[in-house]
Amino acid sequence: MKRCGIELKSNQAILVVMDDNEYIDLKIKKIILEEDEEQQSIREFCNDFLHFLEDNQIETIFIKKRAKKGTFAGGAVTFKMEGLIQLNPKCSVQLISPQAVSSFERKNSVQFPHELKKYQEQAYLTLMASL
Image 1 (tube, helix red, strand yellow):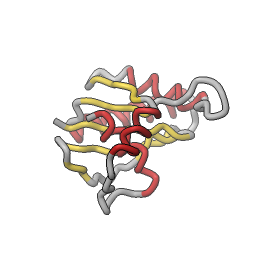
Image 2 (cartoon, one colour; image 1 turned 30 degrees about the horizontal axis):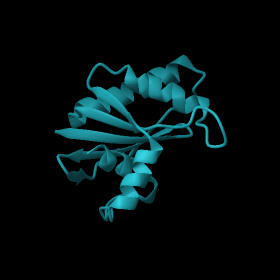
Image 3 (cartoon, rainbow, N blue to C red; image 1 turned 90 degrees about the horizontal axis):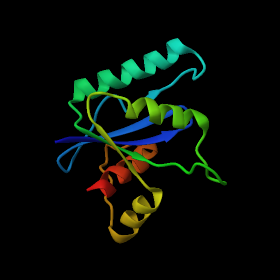
Image 4 (cartoon, one colour; image 1 turned 60 degrees about the vertical axis):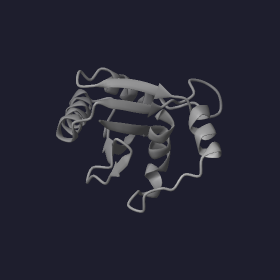
């Protein structure tokens, strides 16, 4: 069963895919929403994301939640991207709290795959915390 962990940051959906408990090093590591105020750009983001899901046969998506208010609140663009991801007809989407991710990291000695890029670590931890 292929699962995808996502961290939404700025205008990027940072992606990590695992099949069962094995990390899969894919060519596509992030999908970018170029211009969030242009309909064409939003459609491209949606199409790119759906192609990614189809090409990699993703069954479940886990997104690291962002705060809605306060100092560490997520930006408006990340919430727009989250909504677009949740509307995909291909697979289920679940949100994982940052506290669950931090708790998992504290309780487990996480060994990151050597192919994993530094910017993918939070997406990887989100996926691992979902197990």
